Image (cartoon, rainbow, N blue to C red; front, side, top):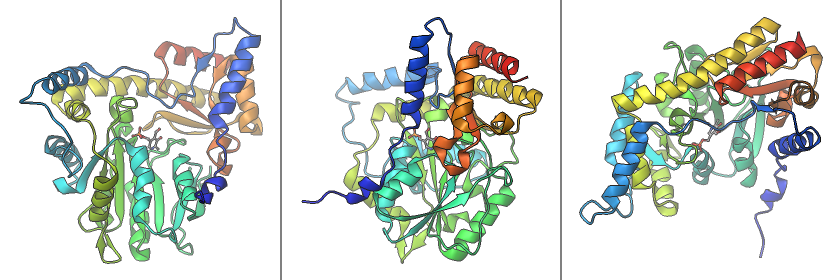
Length: 394
Ligand code: PLP
């Protein structure tokens, strides 16, 4: 009997555990300290009323023989929800077929599980710093990982280097942790590169709902040529507060073929074999996000977070601190002042301002010297936190 020994190659993730340990130790030693947490990557506002009503309605349907639902359909998502997602995409100029959208329990599972359908011999290209799931899921399969440097110089938006050969390319825009967003022209370069190489772009659009400027692409499929080289992952988590409710969707165009095989058909085969679909109740809740009233309500919540983001971004500008994000993203990625290292800045903020953030070094080697603040906190606390930071760093 042998285990999958690639799991032994995984680096332990100390980031959030170390943060919790440091915060708890500080709070025990200073019980009177009023800590403000601007490190949270989870949403904090409750589900909107439209979604709650849909959930109640769907629960009642499940209580009646005539409207009770068992296993979800094999197509991975009820037609009512796929149709609504299609219309949502059409709203930003992207035409999709219903069968190209596959509903799931979130972007994280799909980003990890999609690797089942690709050879372990593929080389993957991953930005550094980035959401750690991309690296770990590939390490688990023993795949070779190449990193592309996201730095202050390129605004944390690396572009293709044609001397590098890769089969799978991860792009996350708006990015976690840097909040940086690719422009249409920049994504065109990636699409051109992927098509030349026969590579596939795994495009993580989990934060597309935070994009404020219509000129910035919300979907890779807004870019000509993307239908032959990209898969898009999206989620209701940040868009509508579904982090604990769980629903997402992955889009694979009919034209995406490699090795003579339809990638979408392989993914459908994988999903129907290993996944029995998203709860009917949850899909009805997701549908409610797309009604006119649902859209109005989720935009109110997103607006609340974006106001926090602006509060933090404005404070950075006032202090003359270099940063990315905050405009089309709930994340503000700042350069630690005076050349400080990420963890030293973490300690300084914790001890001198009682503000908790996330050290950039936890997201990859290029994150050293940077720091992530998030807009998911409470409005009053966010205002108070930046006042404390301004006092400390002036
Ligand atoms: N992708 C990115 C970049 C994220 O930051 C997250 C969650 O924080 C996810 C995907 C996961 O989303 P979901 O809740 O849909 O699994």
